[in-house]
Image (cartoon, rainbow, N blue to C red):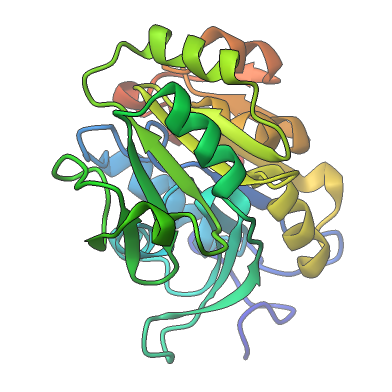
Length: 283
């Protein structure tokens, strides 16, 4: 009997398909939601994700991470099929272990980073800049601190850094206070791009109109999931559009107040395995 056929059963004997059965699309942020910023994955969280996968739900990782940095997370979670949204919505993957890199790129949205980076360089000349080199790593103005970017880092001249279309650009000031950094970004007034400031002095820039939410909506339609059967969980400003998109948008307890304010509900923090409580409520 094939997976998902009538009469097949999910974890705990639950029917995977029966009259009235509806598959959810469950979108999950990674850092600060699935794993802590120190890289710890709680056993309860991993088990809850595994349970949803076994119940034939569409569990989709939706992250600001690059493709290179997303694949190890999928491996840790034991997810070997399905979909992932990377680079804050600019890249959507179909997970395919039969392919050399383990995935196929379904959607890729790019933009010209030169105008935004030129403005940022004038305001913040000491900032580190990384332009995503899809599937390989990053082109960088100078090396980023250890552990902050996964994949190859290749230092290139400025003209080469801004001379190609990109899925995502990252600006980083390791020694800056987040509040002062945010004030700089707001004063610059970036246009014709989408951007989100992280929990440190970190800025991600994406093509205009692109977000985790926009990518997930395209994926929802591809999968035939009803809007009412969408769930999203996240903890940062780059999750806001995703939480607004979902029928049930859940902010982590460690999220900034502005993220909690737009969510339908707030769960425990990542250190309290708050994600597990949400996923267990769906079983």
